[in-house]
Amino acid sequence: MEKTLYQWQEECLGKWFASHGRGIVEAVTGSGKTLMALTAVSRLEARLSRPLKVKIVVPTASLMYQWDRAVRECLIDGQKGNTGRMALEEKIGLRGAGRKGPLDCKYMIYVINSARYELARQILAELRRGEGVLLIADECHHYDSGQNRLIFEFLPHIGSCGDYFFSMGLSATVPLGEGGRYLESVLGRRIYSYGMAEASACRTVCPFDLYHIGLSFGWEEREAYEELTDRMQILYTRLVQMHPLLERIPQGERFEMLRSLCSSKNHKAAEAAALYMKLSYKRKSLICLASARTVCAVALVERLASSERILIFGERISQAAELCRLLQEQYPGKVGQFHSKMGAQANKNVLERFRTGDIRILVTCKALDEGVDLPEVSVGIILSGTSTQRQRVQRLGRIIRTWEGKGSASLYYLHVTETSEDECFLPDTGKSRVFELEYSPDTCRFVNYLYDPAARKLLDQMARSGKSREVLMEAERCLIQGQVRADWLLGPLELQKRMDAARYARERNYWFCMKRVSELAVEY
Image (tube, rainbow, N blue to C red; front, side, top):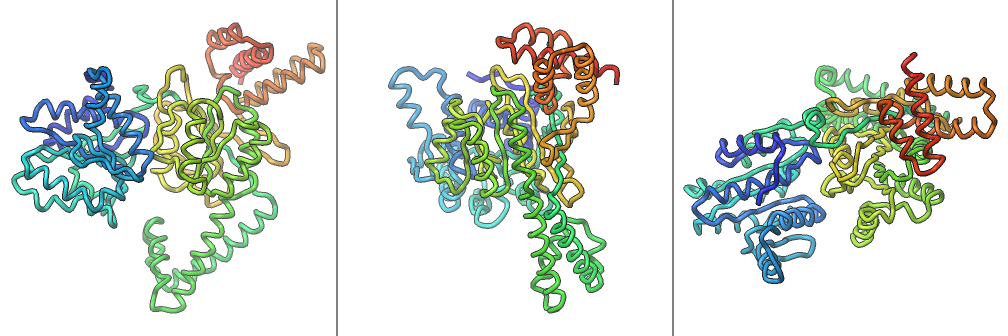
């Protein structure tokens, strides 16, 4: 039995069938690409007059197991008792991460490392036996180069069997240029694009707010940054004199040209380019590891509700480990870390503890950018910026998946102001709200220019009315928490409802303050 689809999924399937079952789908993380693809399987099977084999290729073992669960959920209807479960086991084979399922299963899920040397041969054999084959290339942006292209080696040899070969590429952001053209040549043209703005407007993903938090360097960090920038500028001027083309090409191509100049036959140009690249990496590391980042993240977690499930992204393992240590001191037993140096079993255990709620704060690096479904996460904190749009979209996608009882999500994006750090944070996000905040590690305070005037006025009113020191301190505590949230922007009826439903005095005090701030903010 098919599940009800979103409108975008139905439209996408219509275009895919109109394209003879070939094509690439670009859809934001968390919007339902997996369900759409598995619905394509059932509908395609109903149209074919021959057996259908489904090959699913993924970049990681985590994604292999995620697809395994998704396929089982789709097949479980109608399966009853032990016999049904045994029949289900015979339909799904896993290849990768030590799993070597039989190759004749209807659904074969491959990690790309295992697919490279056997998938093409397997597909060609099945097509020649007269079977239909659907290849689903998940996160297909990984398969446009190097050894990964081997999975498509069968294509020049399918001949007349091509009438019953079908393919679907899935990605949040399909690469441009040569990589994108190659993927279209093997998977079919891009047939559908479903971006963040559309997903937000259609409530395919949960509502979310974005917070850009500006940070400052410590004075020693600022001096080091300025020195590196000055040295880079001198080198760049020298390189432009030798290669004027550098000034006339886009920034992305400029960086690649500088990299290629490192091996130039012109010894002076090669030396200058190599030193420029080295200084660029040092400057990027200085920005990425700015001391204010971990301090701000700890202060931010302190101000968030204790019920929030928080996912924190760092760029370096050392940074993630330090932040995890600081958070463990305040929330013992409630913090975990997930990254490549933890080991497969340790990562699996901490992920399970996070899913069950045993821990509520998970610190990671790039390991969770894709391939892990965590719909229960309601808050994301990105410790440092990334210039890769795909990575930004994927990280947002980790927190905006819908989940029963999940009202909204928040993403906090930390960046060092007045630096080269990328400030083009995200593509168009539609109706989501964007808040600009600042954090000073010297005073341990946030600045929220929209919220602060009304909060100060409320404290002044309470002081003038003769409220006790204890009451004023409690009000300040509540207002500090509200500074990094959007609760004060809820409507008056919703705020009153939450105040009435509060179980504890501290919770009721918080919602009272948010209601008063909301009323006072209208005056500004």
